[in-house]
Amino acid sequence: MFFEGSEKKATITIDNTRLSLLNDFDDDFWHLLVEQCQAKVLSKISNQDCTAYLLSESSLFVWHDRFVILTCGTTSLVNAIEFFVSKVESNIILGLIFQRKNEFFAHAQPSCFNDDAKILQQYFDGQACRFGSLNSHHNYLYHLNKPLTSTHINPSYELLSYQISREASAILCQPNLTTDLVREFLRLDQFLPNFSYDDFVFEPYGYSLNAIAGQDYLTIHITPQEHSSYVSIETNLNLMPLLPLLLDILAPSSFDLIAFNAPEFSALTAHYIPAPYLSHQVVASTLSCNEHVDFASFIKPTQQPIAPNALKI
Amino acid sequence: MFFEGSEKKATITIDNTRLSLLNDFDDDFWHLLVEQCQAKVLSKISNQDCTAYLLSESSLFVWHDRFVILTCGTTSLVNAIEFFVSKVESNIILGLIFQRKNEFFAHAQPSCFNDDAKILQQYFDGQACRFGSLNSHHNYLYHLNKPLTSTHINPSYELLSYQISREASAILCQPNLTTDLVREFLRLDQFLPNFSYDDFVFEPYGYSLNAIAGQDYLTIHITPQEHSSYVSIETNLNLMPLLPLLLDILAPSSFDLIAFNAPEFSALTAHYIPAPYLSHQVVASTLSCNEHVDFASFIKPTQQPIAPNALKI
Image (tube, rainbow over all chains, first blue to last red; front, side, top):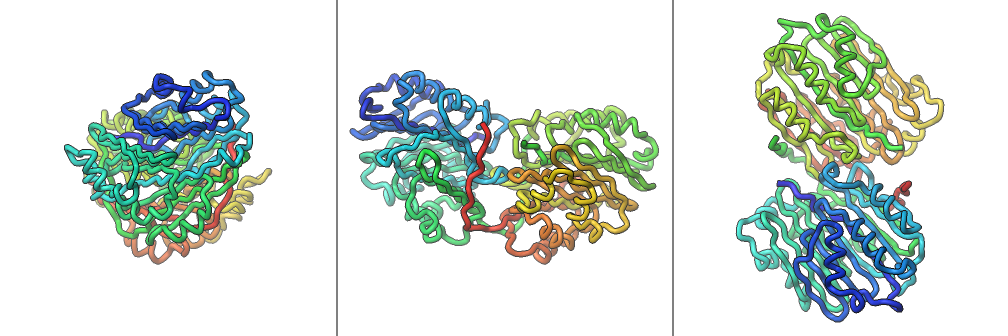
């Protein structure tokens, strides 16, 4: 069974001198927003700085001045953005980043990135670009032309791991998998002490985790099936020093890093990415909204032939 | 302007003790077959062993015992196979290989590989498999379970080059491009002396070449636009010793090799692929139809950041 693990993502920043996303919008609002893209809220955790909703298709994090929503599968995330836009005064929105990663099964999606960007352009003055080559891993990005002030510029990191090791797939696809087993496998205690967790094991396969501590967040989404495996980890913690551990656990055959406003991205990748991984795409830009984006794609060279994948017709 | 350069391909082998594809089927038949997949014949060259049709979307080569058809864009190649099947007795078909390469714009295709395989499986007893990982370059392949005898096992080689150098794109996208200019750029005289050529420059971009000499063939299809460039070269000549020259001319950022029934594939790739290219996927198998397939995907490592691609909305 194949599942599109690859996410769409939206980050919306608002003027929180006029409105607080945490205080002025209730659970019902966020449930309704999530339903717009054919996903639903499974559970939530919260503290005074952040509420994290675990979704049937990924995650939603809400802070006072911004929210981040990630959805996978065949969801239409752009509908959730349209819903939000219809509920607030337009000048309250200071920033919007909308991203779509390259998909495994693009033909099964209800829209392509350009369709989505066209919808967003009806509401905003924005620009679209692609980080990474069309024939390889890439990330489509739509952003506003309006510069964000430095108080609203936040660092965040995404690690997108493709084709994790056969052993990792087998552990994560085992029958009767529990959240405890996955937490142990991911060695969460080693890199997320003091975080509140909310996690879920999906049927027949899949695992999602939200973790928060104050304003900090980390989310993990796992599509573990051996020949279409995909694990995404996103956080505002500095992910770089954690890469050796995470790559040791997952052992993907390739992975991408996407960082927003991350200091010393190239120096840190050079320092922390272990052999034998090699970068074959590096893309960087400071966008007109003042956010700086780094994208790098890594592969593991091999000369050992493997068998093709038999497919059901 | 984007164009899907990536090809679908079918190879059909028949029992030529009962029928000759060259003698018993006329031009009208092949024109009609080509029209089934929404392409058309532009021109042809022929000798006593082979007829090569240049198509509006790629190429068709016909020998006495087999034909190979490649089509790109949004063509439905499977319809041409259905047409052929409807015109011959079923036991005359000894072999069928149907391939689809990973596409740049899968969402714009009228079908996915699995849809096509389902149609073929109505007529044949076949199997489907994928050479290469879903998240990277890959080649879908459908083949019959019937073993081909050695007289019908032919070697062939495909070089699929992605993102050729900016200089190569600029030369191949220049206004008033002529077939002579492309032939010179490709240094055809160096590796195709004694071949008959038939080639065409498309508007606004694109170039196709068929070349034949006796039973030998070579075909080149170029989609030169800088950010979605793709050049495919297919031949039954031993392509391996030509790789250093071709990679020097095109300088792609990545490329794939697919070889059918090629002796010493790994030794020859190790010998002929120049630095800094590295293989990151190698897949090999002898199929139940007796054909041996090798697939290898190569990239050029880089640590130099480039800018993202601006996209029109």
